[in-house]
Amino acid sequence: MITIWFLFYLLAICSEPCSNGGSCTGPNFCTCTSSWTGFQCETPSPIIYSQSFVASYISGASSQCTAWLTFQSQLVSRPYTSMTIKGTNNPTGITLTNSAYVLGLATALRTNTPYGPVFSDGYLWAVGLCGGFYELTTTGSVCQCNTGYTLRPCIGNGNWGAINGHACGASSQTMTVIFR
Image (cartoon, rainbow, N blue to C red; front, side, top):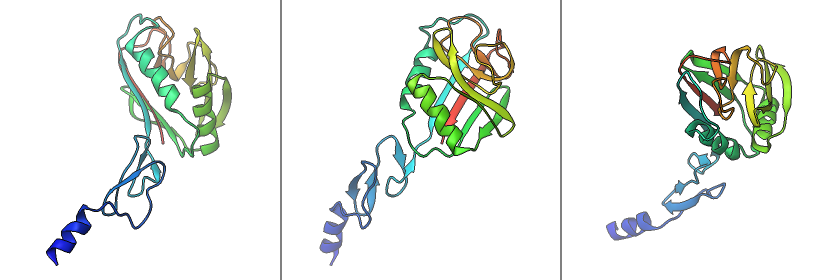
């Protein structure tokens, strides 16, 4: 009896199939790709950008810019439920919960196309071109020095944005964007 149980334990048998490219690697255990999580790989993993900025000039070839471009490329079309922007100046952040707008912003960032502004959850959300790269803002105006939530890590100067602050010449801070 113990031998049969041990053999069953070694077999990769899943009573429910693994989804989204996951592999059954043990009895009722799925190993998911990096984009998915959950028992059957049914839940999309959050896509996160988080970088620290020092108050001063940053070059277009900075690690913050490289991370931003990688982040943008990961925003594949899928059923997003929310997007949160947070950081040092607001650790809780603000969250967009209109899933159609979240998908619109994700698509615009991934494809480098303008989007918005769209009004939801008290903010004017937009994606647009600034300094040769695309930014994400909640001020409704791209490439402006407004106060609010703006990320433009590839601009190549000190106007890289801010979380709950002035987007140009901002103080040192960490800025985070999470798509769920």
